[in-house]
Image (cartoon, rainbow, N blue to C red; front, side, top):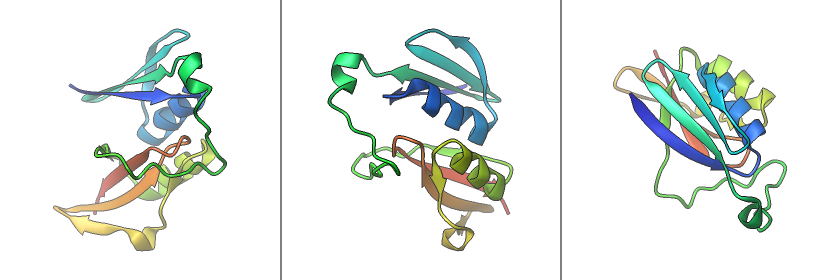
Length: 124
């Protein structure tokens, strides 16, 4: 199983984004963490401690955090459905015209409600 920890100022909102766009289920939750699971993947949405979160501003729409060396990529059954789910939970997925194809998959970038860049891939 692959796992990823995502730090979030608003755990509830970021958790909802990944639950809905990736079809993940909350298997454990407390005030500081949500454990989301699906076939072959586990995400931990980890609340940023308040003393640090106070210095972080999330704009609406969020400023895209493109200055990170990491970009998680997730397989989804359908990019259009992922776009609807992303927008319903405060995130974004680029328009279909921006997709590119590689190794039998259609690929699009987007971001979660806090601006973390995420890539979505679906079968052609």
